[in-house]
Figure 1 (cartoon, rainbow, N blue to C red):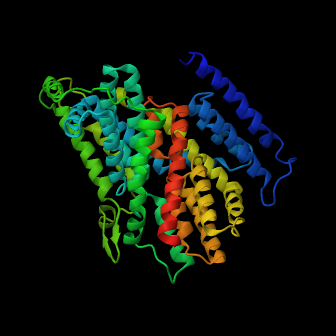
Figure 2 (figure 1 turned 90 degrees about the horizontal axis):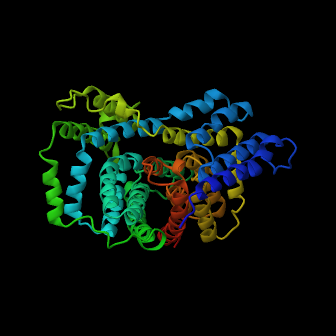
Figure 3 (figure 1 turned 135 degrees about the vertical axis):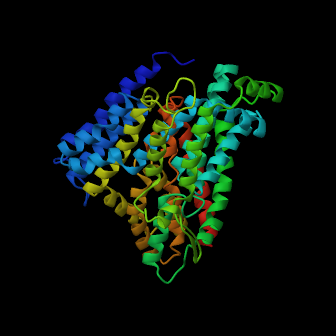
Length: 495
């Protein structure tokens, strides 16, 4: 049994370790020996990153407070001006999270998520392991066509209702099941984004780099990408599920969430569908439809225009849709006797604001990496391994990218890495897809840190997953992803 003072003790240790390893780089950056091309400002950025990472992992101080450290430190340390750092905390991804959380609160307030959860249990069955696989697979399928963040937001109210039900049956077993189903949903969404070129921005960036550096081919068309990436998704989802349910978390499969007769009795107890449920699900459905149909989709030479292009609203994004849906929830009457709106402000303030700041802090760190050239330097270090045999170089690239994206935006990392890998492929005279394709997929394999990707941030925001747990589980999923992405990519393009 864990001693009740263990979290506090680890927080104190993490606080001082972060300062011990990070502060010297901040205070003595101008006097420390630095590798060629690495500036003192980059050393200071690295020092702040070490402190932030250590404090996040051990929850040394409130997570939102740690996330604000780059906002104060980077301008003071001449890493990046405030006008560069501050927008990170209101980026489109942050607005997507904020709007999505508010939309989910409206659904939860109406109670519609409980009714949906009972229908899911009746459809899929009540086996805990099967439910984890079902949620992970559904999130992966959705994420192939819309962002992994939006996919997770759509799944989360139902998952939370099932987790609540599990914990009423058996507290300890329910907590393990809850950890598995929440992380499985988040990880499934990140894995599914690998499956199509439009699943996540790094995929598009890799295709653009390939076209730029190798205009005469080979190509990565929509069909080429799907045929190469889909086997990885199909392999990685069940491997991830197996790690969660059988190896790391070990879900108790004897946990019963109710027989069919009990579930139907619970549904009957909820009574007829209320107006607030119908209206909250309507708003949620509109948001989901807009997310799915917003972007253009290309199939070879055929392009299906999304509503943003058709209406001349190319400046919108998924965050715009999330905020619009949240605003509608504030405006539409709930339709119940109380006369309140679907989302009153007293409910909206329950948004996990620390998590919104957490995600902004991760983007702010990326700004510091870019402003000081630390990202470019790290990329150049990677390119120095160009004489390494191609399969080994590819494996090291996937490994490095997978763990680097835990602290950097996957879009920022792919923008930095793809030109370097394109040049490396030219000098090594190999098929560039051997490097660009797996590196793009590795940018989506951030399973350890809440600020690394939207899905991780969302499940952490439920309050049911601690950072230490996410790091422990995510580390093994990271390793599995490195092996599967490297192996399948080499078999596909390296032969």
